[in-house]
Image (cartoon, rainbow, N blue to C red; front, side):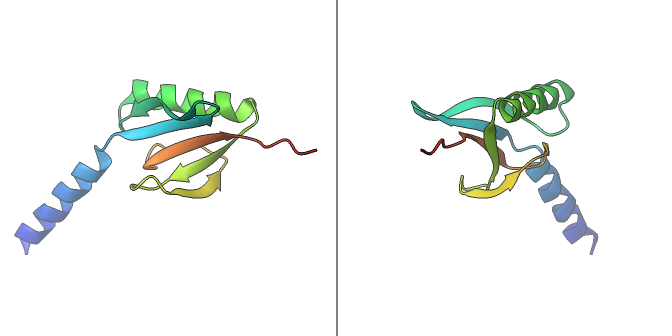
Length: 93
């Protein structure tokens, strides 16, 4: 019983230590802006600030899954997301 619980906590620890990515879709393509590790205060603060900067510039922000699939639009930073994609808003005419 304890062996399984140790494996679960070890797997949870490994998942939370994975590097997260903030990517920006722009005219040059899909570029990596920065990375962070949950729990690393300096990295999380930089990622949170970058999120706010792009949101304030009018970009739409989306959750990225572990396999880089775009998910739901997000309006608040969450350090535990696998990644974030910033996409400029389309201007129609």
